[in-house]
Amino acid sequence: MIRTVPADAAAIVRAYPPMVVCFAAALTGTALVFDVFYLVASPGLTLALVYTVPVLAGLIAGLVAAADDVGLERRVLLRTVGVAVAVGITNAVVVAMLAAMTRTDRSNWAAGFQSILFAGLTIFAVAVMVVAWSRLIEVLGIELRTKLPRRTVRPPVAAVAVASVPRVSKESAARAPAPPPPPPPPPAPTERTVPLFVPPPPKVVDLDEARPVTPSAPASGGHAARPRRTTSRRPNKPGRRPGY
Image 1 (cartoon, one colour):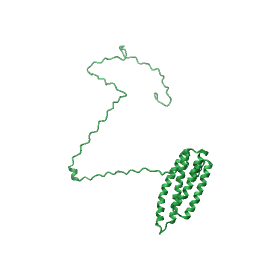
Image 2 (cartoon, rainbow, N blue to C red; image 1 turned 90 degrees about the horizontal axis):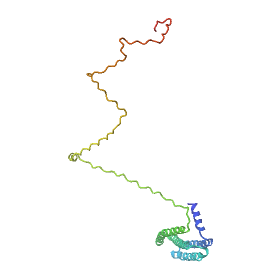
Image 3 (cartoon, rainbow, N blue to C red; image 1 turned 180 degrees about the vertical axis):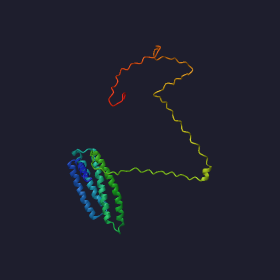
Image 4 (cartoon, one colour; image 1 turned 135 degrees about the vertical axis):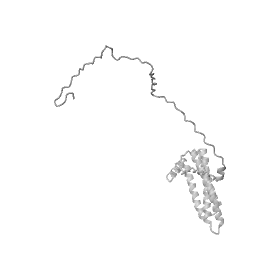
């Protein structure tokens, strides 16, 4: 905020013509000089309003007279006059509160009551001044760089509700009817599986039934000729028995 507040103030000042800025600065300096004299003299609130009203009247008259020459819009002019009035009233209340605080002592309770009253009025006046400045900034179309820090609000933690279980005596538990049995669980759904291989049914053989006999070789009246061996025999090596 230390770096952004001067930049925002300079942006607001540049939105006005230099002649209006110089005129307002001169009247503001005059008001500050009267504030110093007021705090030294420490009079009542009436004198603070007496020297504040002429300064505000001169500032408002100068703005209205220079509006046509410098080309101020009507909305900007009205918001500027509202800011000037809010700042003037806040200044008068603040200096009156400080003067009442300096006059307060053990024997002057009236000044203490005035200081408390002016402190309450100061809060209200500052709130009105802040609203007037925000309206003026919106009309000027200036985007402020200063952002007020916002505190993150954490959601409240919900309290855990603890259910109190009542205690049951043995007599009441014995008299209580028995709870009904739980319902049987539903049957599990059956899944049809398709087998990958289905073996053929076994063949039933009737032993009393005659079976046909098929010959393995043609009947020639004798034994079948044995095929002749064509493979050559291995020669006998010395030192080994034949056939091994």
